[in-house]
Length: 300
Length: 300
Image (cartoon, rainbow over the protein chains, first blue to last red):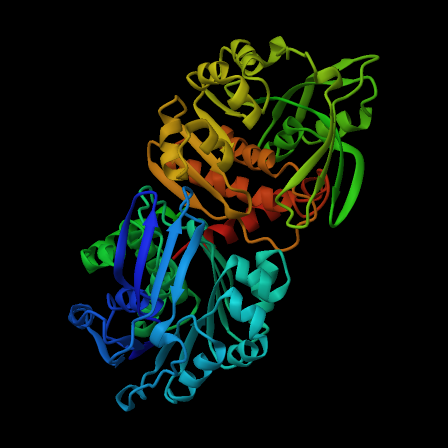
């Protein structure tokens, strides 16, 4: 089933205790698309500046990602993000955000993409996410991401969006902020009342919790030793989940669990090195193998 | 197989955002023993003062816990612990610790208990834990707990103890402190090098990670909504694990996983109300039912 992702494409400068990279390919839609591309074709909508290296688009294309929806603003500069991770690899400090062409951009979904049946709205202003949804009339399974900023400042628009989507990814702090409920289980149940049938609370190294009509499922993270760069782990997780579900025969509780297993494993790969490198050098067979290992680990 | 636990017996005064209790039955050995008693008989060694309500000992006895190893110091006062939990229910502040008779107590294992083949050394000074081990010559499967204080101040004694035990329970912060390794997976592997074949890192609401000769297994917590009092959850978890293993036909990777599932579920019961109440009113069949539910949740 056709999968469309709309969100940011960035040039990231990242420092972690394990090293650093400058102006490498990043952005939530990019990470998501690369992860989802393990399962089938992906359509990408976003915006970059004239300074965006064309080889990045070629690279995405070589992975079955249709980049015709990536608008190039000649004379404009690509969104840039600079961050540094602390020793624990969980906390980070954003050193600079240059929105550039992303600033007041309203995504345009190309006519060819209008028949997409699965849609992921990566983190962005809720009004922008809603405008994308308006442009995807065939979308029957829509999941979105959000962040603390929108929960605090755009609550009305976010509530409206949540009534229109089938699923929501958010991290633990955001779940608490959104519901004012400190217990994550209570928070997840409360979020389902806001609209999304499937709520997936991301807890990073502590795994995730799925809330759906089949009940509540807590899953651990894949036990990963070496972490070099946690950037994009949440988007890769979402990309694995939706990439799998877009091709699955069902989206029942069992399928969602399997999708989360794939998302969990892809996230375990992405943190092993900087930028998209781990995904680019990993074969689908390795992803399958680690996923089977993860599933076996949980068999009691 | 006979299971002996040696550790503290306390009178707890606890305040949480959900209520409070005064001078109720507590202590790590007590919580452990009550959890383990779901699986078979338990032998308890500890010390209380003359002020210890005799009905507490009767209660423990009624659960198949042999309390002949509980020394009563007439004229002495029982160990008391007072704590308050913050809103998030994870962090707490210890308001007072009155060691009383526990202060310079050296546990004496009654001769009758010398043939115990499974032994749990609840948190205590490593030298005290080692002296118990000396009194349990038949113990072939020994697990222990520890805390940050001993890691900081009694490292030599702790290292000596770790070389003599088969398993260690500790929380995430303690694992990092013990190894100076921030990544929990690396920390757990490093702790196995110190002696224990089985290392179980407790992460509270985020579950646990098992390190054994069968590899690494991360498991979530049971997704529990209502939490009224987290006191004793770690000891109940350990009690479930060892209680199960003491009666199991094997202690291989599969058995340890199943044991941890039981520990996880018993911990989910204990947080539902104050003191030991939830365990006292729960039938083994309910524990089995929730454990099967937990196992099914993890089947992908």
